[in-house]
Length: 162
Image (cartoon, rainbow, N blue to C red; front, side, top):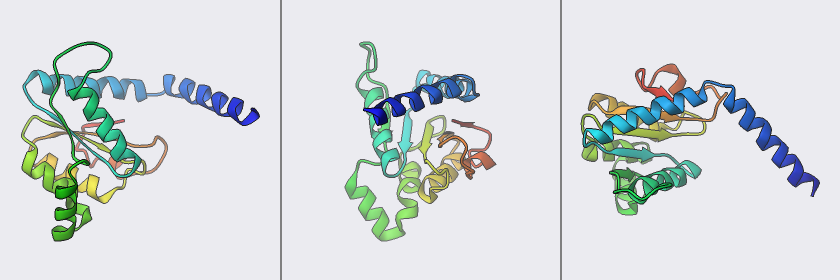
């Protein structure tokens, strides 16, 4: 029972730290970038590895399905779900290109790419961001706060880092 109480206390402390940080501003800026893209008929692409891949799928599902209220589906794609694309591209070009190749094929100017990486250094997410920037796709990077990462160094080209 004590470990459960400890975990809840840690969660409360973390929530307070988040409320006092810049993260809320960054989330609001990210939401506005996505809102504008969707209003302009564009889509949101998500990518990440491991748990971030699962998060990518969940986020895309909330856009296409619904979140909190009944509404029309919103165009969003998790680049983590098509095993045929992932395995073919990984086999032919290497795993570092699995998301970049999909951004090249599916992304258009004005779309948004959300790259999730706990470390901020996932080579395949960074490669996808490079392709996205070249195509005029806005980038939002989601990383674990406090970790040194390439996203923080401006890989997203001035776009939002959460």
